[in-house]
Image (cartoon, rainbow, N blue to C red; front, side, top):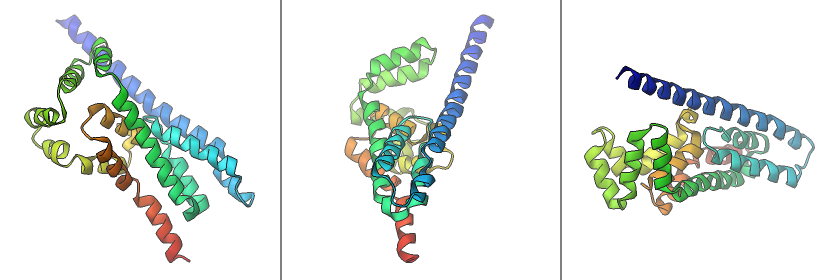
Length: 220
């Protein structure tokens, strides 16, 4: 009994250390790539080079799609340097990045993911994924209604789009995997259809580009 409990603590410690490495490593990678891209230096040359901006946007899409990597800083840097001229492009790039993560999550074989989790001692999550795999959309709703904590049921069942929008815009959401991680888990859960996810994403990422465009208009 003592040996089993010790193994559980060791597994928990290893998972916690791995989680910390994901956060720290993702933060370091995002900052390293952001500084190497030198967005401001491109603008100082006068007319920005199309190829350089395209490369930055590609890096932004890839980084934003990767869980725990805060790629949004690149989008914010582009908006700060180039303003409303790139607001629509950054907006569409963000939607593309999150949709990519969501789609990858939908394509992950559930039985293989459950097996991987079980091999690493994450039994409860593995059981939940296997249960979800056997259920359709309505069955998943019933499962959540029966098993989710009472305070969480409305947000997972009735207001899941609002929950998704709040999580995407939550300060410090890198701790939850960032936008890419949240979109990936949403795809894995299959709790939102593609049209629902796309509508939620379009609403979730709109505030900053709209604010930049509005500032440009009202500021002359």
